Length: 166
Image 1 (tube, rainbow, N blue to C red):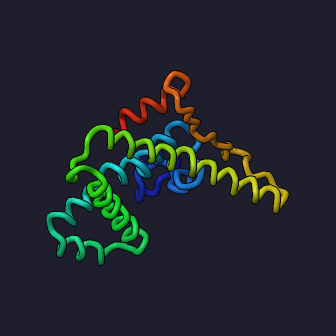
Image 2: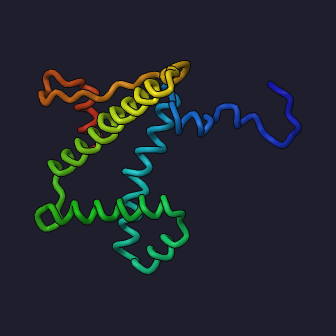
Image 3: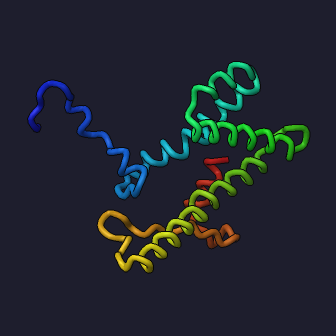
């Protein structure tokens, strides 16, 4: 154990620095924690909770919205807008499993293909303009999810993601 002046406990030794999670998580534990914070909480907690509050108590929702920062307000309103649009696009607002698979597929492409391709393109552009290597040390070049369109030749982890996220 290291020196302690009694102000901090050793419990913090197992925590992951937020800067590591936000920039380039590289250890499996970092990636799991990042996914829990960045995806699970937004898709399965924050968004649905915001929508339910909006649906059941509009006045309370807007009071809650006023107390949020601007980026969180945008995230909240975007989530509600997406849920409303999802209901409008489906028969009488009923959402079946096929709709859930479609939504999971759109998120898979957005989160694990498009955003990765955009990041790689931006980093490659920075390398070319500055002449300095970007993918060094713990910053490893990510690979975008590759969906072939055929289940027999697609990575089984992607199919499992679709099933679990649906």
